[in-house]
Length: 459
Image 1 (cartoon, rainbow, N blue to C red):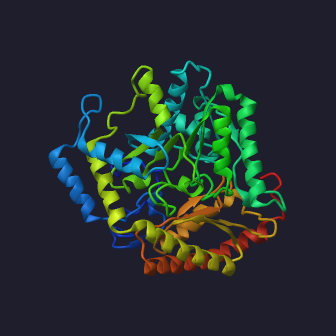
Image 2: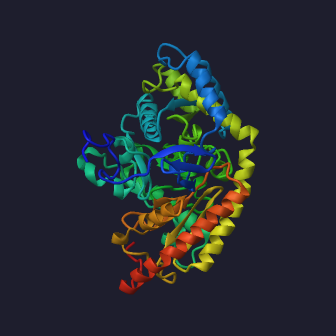
Image 3: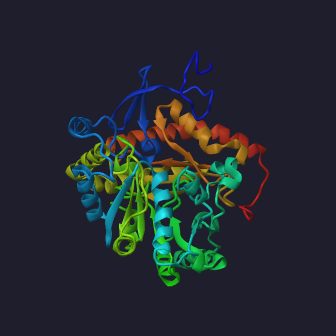
């Protein structure tokens, strides 16, 4: 069916058949045939306070009646001012300035522009490169994708992408050496990152960018403890800005307002999105330290350019209402409690099914991998597309989870329900996941029968 006679909306799979979502309530989504789905991934780790919150709808309605839009170079507005104050008060250290955009991709672009401008205004004109990691994802715009080590999303764009240098991933399950302690691996992984900076030349590097926990590109890759602190020290030593992408992990997803709280670090630029508006409106942002804004103030007195809808009052009002829900409902405490419950449940499933391994995560952000053999951690072949195959089984049973994993294998799954999920709903999620794993087991056995033993020495 073409756009004239059928749907005119371009879908991810052009001729794919998609259920039509009609409403949401709490952790559930409903389609136009009356089917119910437990949203076990918060969409794309976004619907942090669940669906259909009447207080958010009321806040949007009230603000739309008052002022929906004003342009940032002509006016400021009350909701954006208040949101900046509330977010920077939650952030670590002297991340005292906020700039709001519309998506995580735009936040990454703004970070690039900010980092380069910061050095340009100090007459450090060679510092224009951003160093990222081989396994990472920072957005789909060209600059953000250039920084992303997400092989599945890069191939179509060739020379349009900048060839930013990449550092190795920090993922002990795949890359730690036998017998290496967590501290030793943290040291080595950070040293490898420093080597990437030095190889390109620190005098040319404006900043590095990392996700504190890698989401879609790896399936919840949690770095060894101490790794982020070491990166902070490396950036200080080489005069490089430290950009932390908390578009997924920020706003309570890990049980803290920001994941970098866990290691006590203060990045120079912190990116946030997704949970900032909890999916009720497109808003993301960047938080900047005092020394960055001081350079802008003492130089031209201007900040890097933004976007038409940057800091719009309607979006800011929605985010303020989301923060009110987070505070009034004591959501962070719920994340910690339900996170422990989810972790215990996933580890129990790992014991029951020998084809899932490396349950990893924090708060309500968890992932695991599919393997054919735990001894050598052999994954299913890339053409099996294990993560997508499994998520389709889950979907048919009324559970939404998120396919992920290091491309091209894509053998991981993300489980990240709304932060407001209850204990009973976690139990239901785990029961649905158990049922899906049971149905997936015969598929795994077929793949095992067809597989040849291998090791992951070239992974």
